[in-house]
Amino acid sequence: MTQHGTELGGQTTGQGRKQALISVSDKTGVVEFARQLEARGWEILSTGGTYASIVAAGVAARQVSDVTGFPEMLDGRVKTLHPAVHGGILARREPGHLGQLDAHGIGTIDLVCVNLYPFRETVARGAAFDEAIENIDIGGPAMIRSAAKNHAGVLVLVDPADYPVALQDDVSAADRQRLAAKAYRHTSEYDAAITAYLEGRSDELPTALPETLTLNLSRAAEVRYGENPHQPGAIYRLGGAVGPVIDAQVVAGKPMSFNNYADADAAWALCQELAAQETQAQRGDPVAVCVAVKHANPCGVAVADDVRTAWERARDADTLSVFGGVVAVSAPVTLEAAQATRGTFLEVLIAPEVTPEAAAWFAEKKPDLRVLVAAAPQGVSVLDVRPLTGGFAVQERDARPWDDLCPEVVTTRQPTDQEWHDLRFAWTVVKNARSNAVVLARGGVTVGLGAGAVSRIWAAERAVANAGERAQGAVLTSEAFFPFDDVVRLAAGAGVTAILQPGGAKRDPAVIAACNELGISMVFTGSRHFRH
Image (cartoon, rainbow, N blue to C red; front, side, top):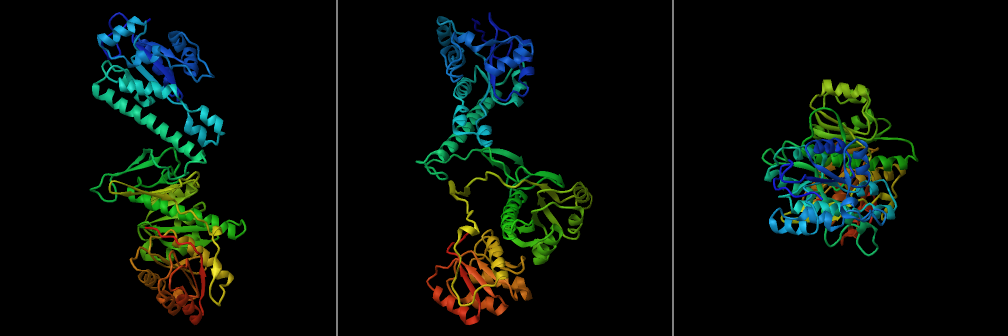
């Protein structure tokens, strides 16, 4: 058995050799790391596939079972759960503990290099429940936590990027503590992923809102600052989720800012929802959707047969607000579509594809424009998390589709087929705008938007003023009910012909009567969509 040394830097000390236990799922760089440890006089213990890999590469190693005196058992569920392993890791490097190790013939383990079974990856590829359970690591977290607790005497490594630290002649106390903190974060994230998975599987636990909610966040991107230059900021990933904007490929332009991420995420979400809805309405025929967002609110939205036309219609919906905005499109951006943005300053353009010619044109003609290629969202979190002082407000995301509604015409006049199409289009836009919100649309284009107002009539007045003459023959949607008939009378005066709103106000009869008086169709959805 290896005898004990007293110096902690990775050198051969005292009468024995330092022992490193290496057992990793992510084998990036592990063979070279083991080779360098061996060259520095370390003795290496290992298990399973890691042992096979490093021995095949010519590195001398012993199996952990040689130290414990027990073979791996229970299909590998028990390999390292043994006093010969945990005693060697947890012993303080002082006479009392070292004497106890000597009494039982146990050597110290001075480096633990472990990362865990690929639980999240297994779940992400849709594995069956039993396979997911078998990918819950037990021995790995136990060794990591033991080593992190005893980091004054044991180096703990969970990330291949930290391997060079262990090869230094002397590892500082600060680096040891940093590695220990990283190790506990590693196991914490792992436990959080398992918890979320099991809560989602259990019939006895709420899927989205458990009594204790762990937000497992890891930094995905750095930004220069937050909403304002005096606020530090960064972009974090929730668990192992893939975010269409967080993970988008930047094919041209400057790095993304904090506000760019927020606006691009809002634009892409609405664009994808509308694209799916419009494709369904066209019975599978492809359509192009363009969504322009400014300060998290849509400011121009359009549907067309091609991206260039969709962009031009969305731009012309509000040429003033689109300046400096963020634009998402649902179809590939060609050189022709790219050139159509000439003359309009944009912060971000996000699309499912950008041709090489278009990317080159953007890089030359619009070097400040961030051009992103994103994938359709998959496995999006059902949680909507918003900060409070000292906590968070958490709810399920408002993802209720149109097909989940039961629209009811409550007026004498019925909407025409075109009005029905525009009402559905405008309803999707308004539920993605900040309350109070009112949207006017005609022919698959938003012609007037009023969002973020403290009064519904003010939101309607802004939308009508924004529309101008384009309000003639348009439809109007509101994300919440009308407490009075004032919006109806304003809309009728502007030429609006159909209105969609949730209904449910005390004065609904008066509002309906006003519509009948003025010859306007009104549809109740029974579902409000506040968005604060």
